[in-house]
Amino acid sequence: MATPRATARTPGRRLQAEAKRAAILDAAEALFITDGYELTSVDAISARAGVSKRTVYDHFGDKQTLFRGVLGRANDAVVANVRTAIDEELTDDRDIRDALLGFARRVTTGMFPTSGYGTFRRLSSQAPAAPRLPEAARDEPERMMEERFAKFAADGKLRLTDPRRAMQHFVALTMRLVLDMTDEDETGAVGEPEVLEILADGVDVFLRAYR
Image (cartoon, rainbow, N blue to C red; front, side, top):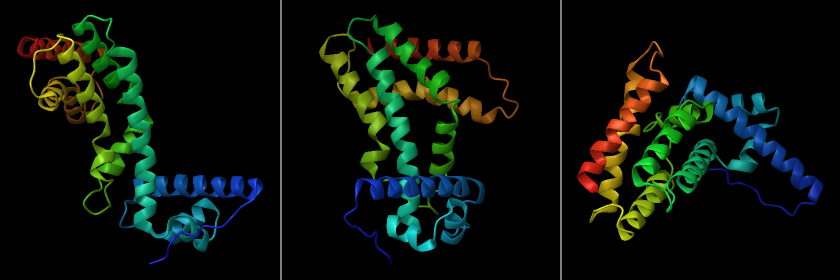
């Protein structure tokens, strides 16, 4: 198995290397999505990126590591979006219902429709044929939500003993329900008013159990 090669670089060489790495990731992402992990070759990735096959191996070592790099980049974008939504919607000075509804709306109408989230889901769905990220990376969005729910409980805004289970219930009643409904509707006819109605109902059910 090839291993990434580490060498001392001048700033100019470092920038050039970073540009090549980004080009490889972009090329690999496009091919992993269109052709799938198993059918995508390092030769095809290097050709699309405009670099040598050796350069791909120098940066990533093998196809498994490269796929994890592509998936990790997509996962980082999801984590950043969820972190922003938590920080800006689930605030201490906000009514708990408004906060929960605002967060769920931010994620479902602001993040779910984006191409970046679509890329993340298409890459993630290729398991078990394709490598997966470490569990800690996969669970980061839920961990951040769990921490905020625990804080709400400590502040007396929610009544719960298991923040993780409460978070899972909240996700199932709101964002997961919207995602499942959208996946099942091949016409793309699910509109924002219907989404908001589902979210409002889910938040109310959640609060009847946990407030």
